[in-house]
Amino acid sequence: MIYKLMAVPQHTMCRIVYLMTALLIFNSCQKNNSRIEQTALQFTPIIVGQINTDVTGTSWNKDDKIGVYMVRSGQALSSSSIVNGINNRLFNINGNIFQSKSPSYLPNEQVDFIAYYPYRSISDFQYPIDVSDQTNLSALDFMYASKTKSMSRTNNTIPLNFVRQLSKISIQLSITNTAALETGPITVSIPSVHTTAGFDLPTGKLHVNPNEKKDIQTKVTLSGKQTATIEFILLPGEDITRKAIKFIASNGDHYTWTTPQNEQLKKLIGGNLYRFNISINKGKLSAETGNSQVYLEIPKMNDLSNDEVFIQHFLPEAKTERNYAMLYNKTLKMAYWVAYPLYRDILGSGNRTDAWGFDPAVSTAFQPVLFKGFQPTGYDRGHQLPSADRNLNITQNKTTFYFTNMTAQASRLNQGLWANLETKVRTWTAQCDTMYVVTGAMPTSETDNQLDFARDNDGKDIAKPKYYFKALAMKKGDEYYTIGYKIDNITPPSGSTFDNYRLTVSDLEKATGFTFFPDLDNSKKGSIDNRIWK
Image (tube, rainbow, N blue to C red; front, side):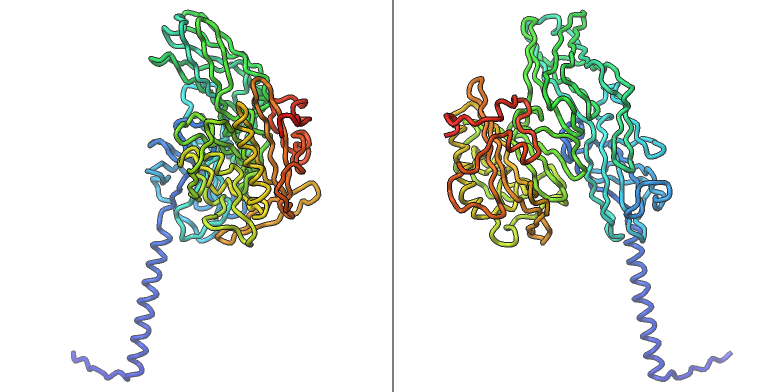
């Protein structure tokens, strides 16, 4: 058979070459799209909350597992909203990333994620919680994450903010000259607390069973120094005031410590750590409040919203000594208040770092970007905890430059009257035992509920405070003296004196809605002693 070769016109050949080239480009794009779509889904975790079991900060144990749900964007978690069958899918930790053994992929549509820790087989989207067995605290450290922003189908690594939901009691026990307690393990028990609850994954709400109360206990063994740390995880909302906590030796001898009548202990807050120091010497028990949310400077907190998070920082070089705490709003990207102790030994000079940076306790997605100043001009990056109040060394000072500690403060106020007030607080501190300080910034006022915004370096809105305040409680010997200040930030005063803006702490409570120094009687907060506050 003979084939004849036919000449192909030039314009036809060009058309063929064009079509072949287009087809090759199309196939190449298809392959690239296929590779993007086939990249396995994975999660980067951040932990919020201070209860500090084996899972701390951003560190996870090698065997940690989470359960994940993927739902259509904007829809509540339900059987009908689940996408691609990711319905309580198990993801294992691998380094700092959670991955699934059976690969999961992002769909073409926008989706949201709900996740929790630790993983278990559950039904009806209800996670059962039972704290009656305290032998494995890690297994009780329940955390919840909800990623409600729609994700791009090309972004396969999803950040998740895990928020601790339960509360923790930590008792530092020291025993000396008490032979019965030094010879074997000690049983420690808390009487009559709620032990069961259900966590509703679609709503992110914990529902405590009011009809289930038990005594819970744990066993501890003293170290060579006759000390031990005793920890309990409890359900939030529990009232542990006037609880008779018993320490029972292996021979039957026992000691009882009754918790204080403290406002902070009437309703435990999820994610919070409450510390106490107990000592037994020659058979006599004594106790004091430890480094925890029950310290005097921490305002009373009830029923925090999903936008609000309590953050507590300890000193970098002394992890058991408190640095400062704050109530932070993740949507407004500002702290309502920052609370901290001041005393002579923590004050220094010459160590200002200007180390502007993100707070490691909060996802960067919830913080303003403030490597440069606010816009519009005329507003400074105002510290709520002043740099000079943590100027003893460089590591302490760096913590004051976290963006969570910054607010849009009018330059005239920040560099004038407010700076003078901060200096005066340090002067007063040098003359007393301890100064307890709460510095705050309020985005609304009694007469103006309209939010105003400044912009960060990414052009994103950051709530602009209407006014600033300080609540001070000075401890001198066994006595406490208080005073408050409230100063406008929208039309800041031009003078340099702050005396015209002082008020009682009781009046400041009425203006802000916060309860300051909850352990102090109202009589201590309702007047100003002019002999002290000169």
